[in-house]
Image (cartoon, rainbow, N blue to C red; front, side, top):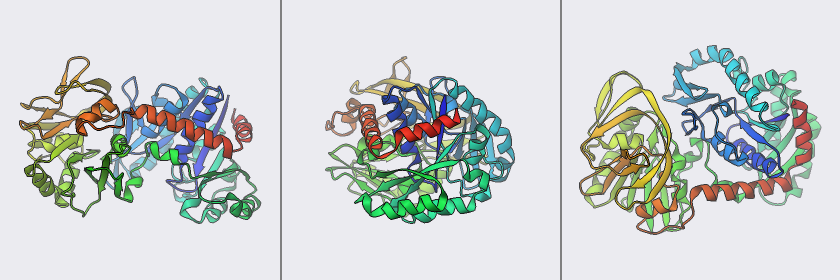
Length: 482
């Protein structure tokens, strides 16, 4: 048995991608590998076969390992609902909504759940590849930490620190981490990796040596900017903070960026279509009138984001788009917004209230404390195009609209307006199959299923890491955590 933990000098340094790449690399070497993240904070969640939920980054890493999803891979998941509160999911099930102060007071209790999951995974694999969260240099959060050094020391798992050279200051960020963390934490770090390097790596030889000299940590490689990583789903909405359009196709699809957007990797298959221009519309910017299709995405807080949508004036843009003959699709929370009303009598998302929806579908939604979590498949009713995805939502939507989809078990799902131009459903991953995309893209598609594209990208990423990381040395370090 062996284990190694990748921690970062900050958020978005590429930890999730590197863990996924390492998982595939080690799996390709014939090892039994499993991923683990003690605590994740993300509104991007995946559904496990036993009806739990984990971060989608761990779902990607499980795919890289060619292993089934398990709630043990991400035992604590925090899903932000506001700037001050988050839904707490433990072992795949919602435990409640906590404020920041209350959550910090409970971290010690959650460590027990984290350790139980880790030990179960470790007993099932040759090696567990662990991903940290944020940075160990956030020493203001060190007390009661379960995501980085708190876990590493409790489990005696050696750490490799990842720095992102593309954002600049990588020498200072790695050396600075050594300077600010406790000596006992620094002793857990056995090496470092430089990620996202562009250009001639020889130009960084002196910097690489300087980091090793000033920290005493072993350099394990300089990883170039790997194009295949762009095909893989991003973990955090931070990737959406640089808005814009991907692709230069003739068909424009616009997605308004809600404040609590969830499962935004729903749109990755569209972004990879050569005939599509996918525009992520930032707050304060009108939805482009050139769009053929507007997709309202999922959200962790439907009522709050419906108010946010109206505050941007997007409700006016959407109404004008429909009058011009454009199409609109709502997914999950976006589907709920398209109806006549959204009611939260039990205060599931916040204060109990009922708000008017956009009124584009004859349906109504009532929020309920119980959450629907299931993998699903079926086909569109109009053209019998197959889909395969998952549901993860806390509301029930009813009405007299004709359904959009039919599940494999015979249930109807979603709604379509009488003119066929407005539709909604609860299905995440709706666009993953090329056959389903064709119906939304007027018959044009690259013909590639998203799962196949992601699997190929993982192999490409693994091959690149094999070239640029001292893998055997990394394995030797991991065996110290046996």
